[in-house]
Amino acid sequence: MGQYEYLQIPAVCPDFAVGTNPFRAGYVSNDPASMIAATEKALALAGQVPARHFSTWTEVADRVLRPENYPDARIVAG
Image 1: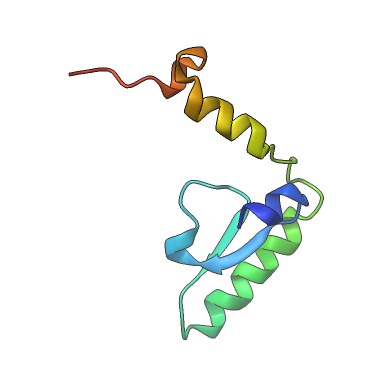
Image 2: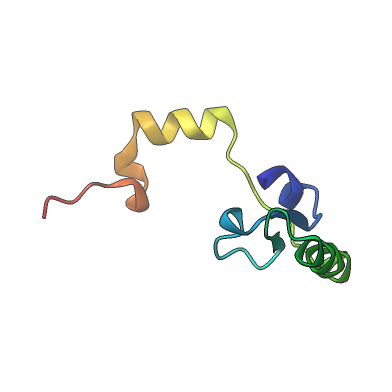
């Protein structure tokens, strides 16, 4: 569903897929009222979704090959 964020569009999805993302509107399967509410929420969020950045393949490869350059990619023995 990251494609929706990339395009700055709120997403309507099953409750389990919402997570902590405030730009996803969740519904309960086979519950028409929750589907309507999720659609209304998504419509209300239109124009408020910030663009999400996704790494390029080059950036991903660099993180894999040179994790020492990325503090958040380090594995700490515990």
